Amino acid sequence: MKNRYFIMAAAVTASALLQAFAMNVFLEPVQLLPSGFTGIAALLSKIAGAAGFAFTTSMGMVLLNIPVALFCYRHIGKKFVLFSMAQVVLASLFLRVIKSDPLFDDVLLNICFGGFLYGLAVSVALKGNASTAGMDFIALYVSNRMGKSIWQYVFVFNCGLLCVFGILFGWEHAGYSILYQFIATRTIDSFYHRFKRVTLQITTQKADEVVREYVGTCRHGISVVEGHGGYSGKKMSLLHTVVSTYEVHDILLRLKAIDPAVIVNVLPTESFVGSFYQKPLD
Image (cartoon, rainbow, N blue to C red; front, side, top):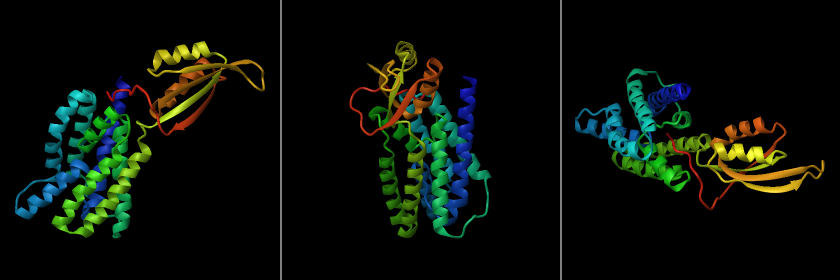
């Protein structure tokens, strides 16, 4: 448990650093708008500044996330929400601390690197069983209920937000921001696979032991077909199950411990119909 908390804390800190670095070094110099609630906070900061009021992006990040955090505290998980809010607080602090000259003068280079690093920051937090809060809270809540990723819908929401940005501050920067959002969303989708599923085809001579271990540690069903090896002629069992990609590594380690000679074929699952146990985030 201590190791788990350490990993979560390290992931949250690294995510906050990457997020603040991407915003201050790549996004702010070319006047791009970040995604989600951070983008709303930045937009409110620009509107307040134009109206002569003081409202910082870091302040908005914290205030906007509090209502959603209270909702998700009950419906997603306490530790998950607490570590996610810690990420928001750290990111808002790092935004004030990290100061650096722009690395590139070219807008497209800033978009590509900024979008990738921002998406990587979100992915690091998600892999550490936390998030960058805001739209991540909503996306994960809906994804848990639906059993599939909805990052493409988050991208559509961000594009709508950027249209407001374009109306108020000009369409050129809004267009660049949409391109940046696309890169960030694709980065998250490439690194975060919690809701993607794979099929495991397991060939073993120790079916009873493997099934007992699998059923005892996983909450997924498994089918057993008896047969024999075409080459060896020995009695074999073919096991079939569908799991989340996040579970594959641990399952393979357990299977190898039971049967060192086990053969496992991992196949992508494009569509799945039926009940499927989704491990809680907490």
